[in-house]
Amino acid sequence: MSELPILPTTVVGSHGKPGWWHACKDLQARGEWGLYDLEELLTDAVDIAILDQERAGVDIITDGESRRLDGYVDGYYSIIDGIRALPVARQAGPWGYDQQTRYEAIGKIQAPTGLGIVQEYTYLRDHTQKPTKVTCAGPLTFGSRIRPNNVYKDTVAIAEEFAYVINAELKALVEAGARFIQLDEPARGNVAGAEMARLFNMATEGVEAKLALHICFGNRFGRARFKRSYSDYFPGVLEARTDQFVLEFASREMAEIEKWKEWYDGRELGAGIIDVKSFHPESPADVAERLRTVLRYAAADKVYINPDCGFGWSPRNMAVGKLHAMVAGTRMVRQELTGG
Image (tube, rainbow, N blue to C red; front, side, top):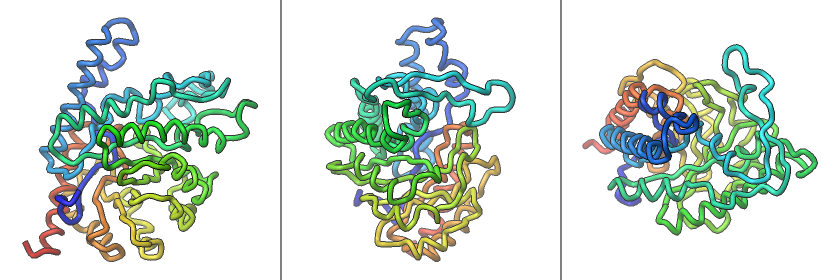
């Protein structure tokens, strides 16, 4: 990615979907659409995500995760063998994480047909001239919703099983041409940073690509899920063989950014300086101010700029506005650095 400017801009993964995506995505499951109709819908949504990012001037783009019908991981459980859905205990009242479907292991966990991320990537690769990034849920993310049920010892053992599934997918991505791959893991609190790193290393063993690790506090429906502090994971997570750590700062009013100086070991920081949980429309000046704060603790040549998390739970118009502000604010600081 030598063609990239200083302070490259990118996204964490998902993009805001058009209104018609939300209105139509479940029609095939209800028998009102055919598979061709659904594929057309999803392809159109990916095209829109690519166009929105290109128009905003984002340097490294994704496909917006627009083919993933129920968040960045939920849809995969339907193609994974060895698990069974459990009844949702609370269905009434305001949405919360306790309304997500949970599963139990009933046999060896595997994905015999793969996760489908290779197909997502190849379409993106063939439909943009921009540098690209591919995203995949990490082993802890996959394993966190599955009960061991006497088939596996514990959640970590389930995550280890998923590490092999993910590893196969990532190697196939590299074979297809992917050069920048990000794994997304939850800041669950019950797994130490060193253990998170060990599982990341299992999932990425032998994967010859630029790697990023996003540690996520949760963002479904714009709501956090976990305690929002990275001090519980660093410095142990530095054992991860990743090229970049993608961390969330904007929604926390830049809390812990000063700790990057303590944690820095020469690797890159993907700095989250757009608050995807807030409807407040950041101005370019807001973004530039946050970026200047980042650069007090991180070297400019080791910083990538991104939102805190994905825009998958944000209205598309909000996501587009925030992307434009992110790019414009970053350009302001670039000019200050280069004098250009």
